[in-house]
Amino acid sequence: MSHAVVDLRSDTVTRPTSAMRDAMAHAEVGDDVYGEDPTVNRLQATVADLLGVEAALYVPSGSMANQIAIKIHTQPGDDVLIGEGSHNWLYESGAAAVISGVQFTICGEGGLYDADQLHAAIKPDNHHFAPTRLACVENTHNRGGGRIWPRAQVAALLEAAATHRLATHLDGARLWNASAATGVPVDELARGFGTVSVCLSKGLGAPVGSLLCGPRDLIHRAHRMRKLLGGGMRQAGILAAAGLHALAHHRTRLVEDHANARHLAERLATGLHVDLASVESNIVLADLPDGAPGADELVTRARARGVLVNAIGPRRIRLVTHLDVDRTACERGADELLAACG
Ligand code: TLP
Image (cartoon, rainbow, N blue to C red; front, top):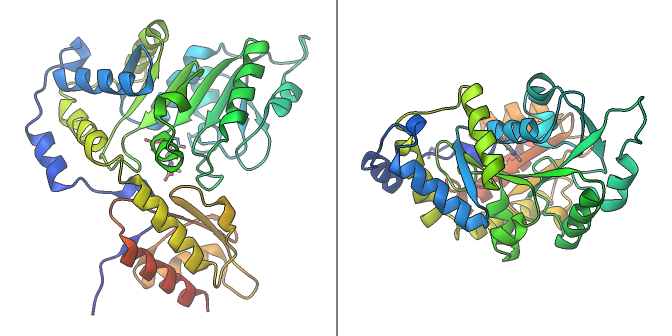
């Protein structure tokens, strides 16, 4: 019996459902560069409202949202504090150096850092050093395995950032997951940050799109940067409609992805090293024990068995649950991976 491929590489691999495609096909549109696309405007208003901010700007990708945020918070030559392995630093092609001319200082371990680590990383006011201007947080933290920032830690970090007059940016590509996992509304998780980016194309299952959110004056500046970077889109309502559909229909189900990730992690832990306590949302990191092949080899073997995963280190793989993998698919994914290790 042949099975469909189980794709656990990322929650970005989902395909639009037929209901989502219907919503896209029937979207009312206009030219968004003139600000005349009613569906984009509705999406921006909806997300601003959900996050409890004045304004939101629809952009093609999470990377663009983050890079616009860094640009509007900094000047060339500035220093930006960021958690280890954060997307802004690791996975955006060095864009912050190119677009904003800033340098990063990595704080803490595993993606999260605390107020003391922030204080320690601030550069003295001395001509040797790049002035520290911005602190970035990623919640959930992708490379950290979908870790959720403890709220008290965020509050203390924001307070410390304010003491040093740092701007703050939250990469909330998976803030929806953090909210679903903790039951804390997204506006509370976003509160206190200067800007927040959220993605519709991860766990929510839309094909495209992110929003940069914040106070009206900053989002006004972000609008110019979106144009400068070539991110102005025309009848983008077709895409925004997918986002609105995702927000209405795919948010509450994220808890299923989290339960599936836990199940997957427990099953994998029978043969691989998985820190079960760190599985908090829809991402599972697994380390390969002695005797197992290396991560690249395991990825190749798993693919031959119809299971797709990503290697993120010589002996580490990442698995992500989403809309297009149910419990049975996760079980099959775990079993094939365990078999491929032997
Ligand atoms: N993450 C992707 C890859 O780029 C690594 C993935 O498969 O997880 N912030 C975070 C925390 C992300 O995980 C991602 C995508 C982004 C931003 C960027 O979003 P896009 O791909 O829309 O630019």
